[in-house]
Image (cartoon, rainbow, N blue to C red; front, side, top):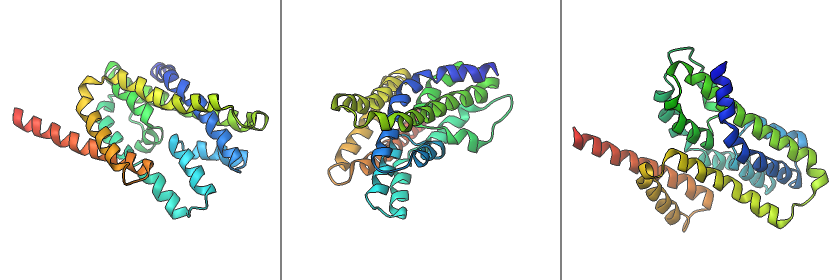
Length: 233
């Protein structure tokens, strides 16, 4: 239990970013015509951060269910790489938690935090610590959404300066977590991903370009590291 609560405490840095973004999502969904119950249900069951905003936009614009589902899945395709990257480091000498439970809370921010901190956790405590980390992030996201749908009818439309601030919170959180992982070690991957995304944005919508740019960066980085590893042996 100590490791779980340590993970819960370590999720505070993620929660600071999640709370205002989730509040903004709740408010945005209400303004788009969704009921408070439906909005909260999306956060409880989907828990996909920025993808939830895209989901709301597509649903309210009349996009078909298949098109909406395909777009959201493509946006989250990067998560296919998160699990295999973390599992070797999650190897535990103690109780092994079910993979679906570990996967549900594996957001970008949880992955970044876990990647930078897991090595400091005793192997026997890693599953419990990770569960605490993702539980804290999840509860904060749901709480932020609940506050958004509860207070949204009283807030109305947010002032422009507050909307601009909220839109900056998530990128700022990503950047802070990136610094924690260490930019120097991943400079090549970051550069490849940024260039691929920028080029793809010339011909594709931004959310598609981002997903494909991430996949391109990950694939080329893996190939480069494999080549370096073979050369060293």
